[in-house]
Structures are given as C-alpha cells and as structure tokens.
Image 1 (cartoon, rainbow, N blue to C red):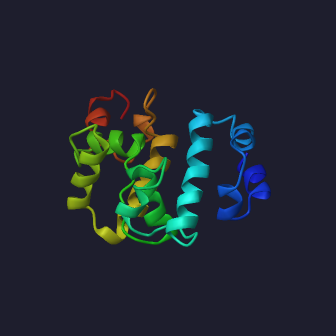
Image 2: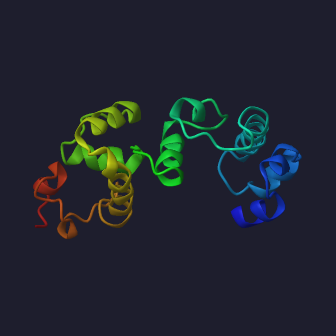
Image 3: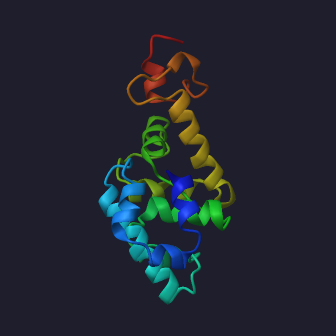
Length: 163
C-alpha cells in the first residue's frame, strides 16, 4: 500500500493536489481509511502553505497537523530528526508499568514519567526496544515470561510459575 501511494504521489504538492477518493482507495486496507486519506491531503496542504513543504521538527508544530498526535510526533522527532523522543505506544505503556518505571495507562502521563527517568539521548532507542520486546516476548495476551530477561524485575514475571 505505501509503495503504491508513494509511487503515485512523490511530493507534498502531489499529495496536496490528490483526489480524496483516489487516496481513500489506495489506503482502503488501513483502518479508518477515510479519515486517514482526508488527513494526508489536509496535512500536505498545510505543509505546502505554511511550512515550505517541510515536515516541522518541533512537537508543537507537528501537533498542529491533521492526524498527528504525540505518538506520531515523537516518532518523527526521534527517527527523522534524531531528537530525544519518548514514543508511548501500547507496548511501552504495558512494559514500563510491569517493570515499575511508570504507573499509568495514560500515554501522556507515561511519556512524562519516562522523560524524568530516561537519558534523553537514549529515550528513542529505549522505546523502540520495548516495541520489539513487546511483539516478541512480552505479548499482551500471552506473555512468554519464561523467556523474558526482565522477569526478575517484572510484576507479571515475578508471579509467573514459569521461571
């Protein structure tokens, strides 16, 4: 899907000028595809008119763009611009709660708690590693506690009969 999208629309201007129905058709396999298609076009119009077709590198500016929340803004800041970022997705929230780094399921509160304890220059890598760990080992429905290297500091791992 992304390959088709970026083959057809190569620049911010191309996206800004796109027909909504065409973008909807390309992203149809995504959930909420109508909203996503609308946001992609609206975002590119704003990027073109207000940001010289360049994605901003500041949180407040990114959050002004349609469809961009803190998680996406942090991904852009960390992965594109190499700035300190704390991406609080479902894996990050679940695992940091299990190991006692955070005590909330609210993404913003989790992000703020992690910013206080993580070295800024390592925060982005830390969050990416949590995603990988969450997908491979600390799965929400069926955690593999016996294989987990964090089981000794994890609330769930300590309770697990598989040691």
